[in-house]
Image (cartoon, rainbow, N blue to C red; front, side, top):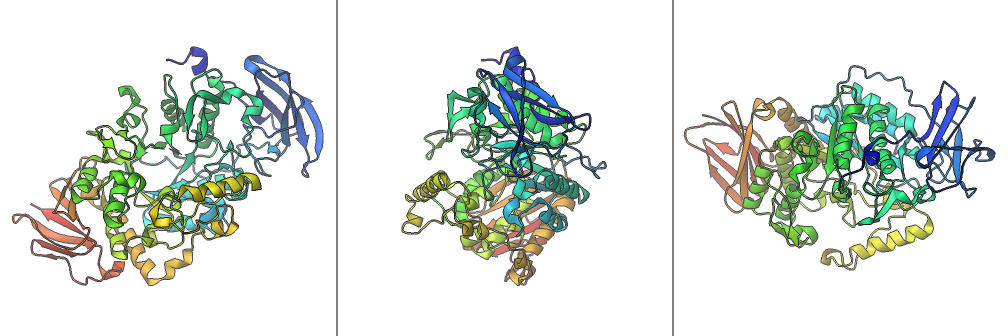
Length: 615
């Protein structure tokens, strides 16, 4: 089915905005209703007056008030009913149930020099604003930007910042897509953070959720039943309506939001949450339109759009000119799962689909993802497509992220399940592979603070969330008999706050040095930076493998040992030199001397060695 011309055309501007300095104009989409009133409030949330809006075309209602300006607070009343926040609100200073606020997009930007990120050279650092600092705000993170730049990161990825219920949440329960979370610092705080990031040479990506809306504070159905459709279903219930009656306005909700992050906040792109659950049977697909709109809004700046998508579909990153969606990157979790199986022994749930063998690890490194059409035991059907020919930079790899940490019942980081030596070996592989690396906040010093699942819902919904969370893990043998932390308990949130003081410890300094030096190598070593470089991987027996990076006649080997002893002889005709090894004492390891003697590499236990070969 193709979208009709009406469905593909851009819907009129919705929400509230300032015209001519002080006049505020509103437009609301409420098809099938008789009337919409704007209800104005003062700073104490007392009603000041009502403004009836005038019916317009396509089920819209519009109107304006002079001499009002930025800062005006309002709700919308449909057919004389209780007033609710504006679903297109740009600011919710009192939370998702309070009045909406009129704000302008003005900001004294200082980033006119900024040209945006290079999509083929990203090093991404994932941050949850609320737990990244004790203050939990956009502005409180600004002093940490120098640390990231010194580390070698060039891209900051913010977990969702659209307004969510309460003060504590991962952000995936957002309901007001256009309104940055007030407890984080709202619109002004986010603009200051992005402007400061650009001054440090850091790009900023916004994690955007378009596959569902949170259950608390979601007033969309009060305005129109067409925001959702029973035609498709997702894990969160009825799907957002992107291809049925009324979808023109729903698609505009998303596309206008994409445009706002790029144009009004100078964001450098988006990470799209669970794109596999973003259902659209029409043409062009919404994903393709998101990419097109993001680039158009950038006015010549480079932007990137990356999707979390479990399907391993090459179409996602295939250019639109070749029938794809044109995304710049896709989260490819197969390597994470193989490494967890190999080093930590995870085997339940989706880990049953992975062996962690050296052969399968090598295959994953050759391809970017492991599943290219094989049947998944966990899913019960075939998964994936052949990625041959796709540039490795399209694949975003990690050894931990917010999901892989936070979706464990106790929010355990990787350090809880593997030895320090294994952690250093896995990190070495991640940072020197040809794929785009993603780090989770604190990973660069092997942070020990957990990242738990936390919420701040109303009591009734909160009770259901707590019960559901504990039931979710009742079938896992590893967690039987243990009490899963209550997401609603404030302590669950505060325990998840990153402890930057850990950096002062000797062990943390060693890992931090490893990350800094390997990221510097990644950014300066010609074999690693060459756009004409190639890579390969192969097993070195049952418990070791090697990743080869080749360019301009040089070869860099990343040799990884999972367990036991490895003695590997390099080609006799090549000149070999050691570049780095994960067990170097300067990184916190215990191996004083080089693991390379002549043309023989010796590794004991979990470890990695980086060797340069010259013919």
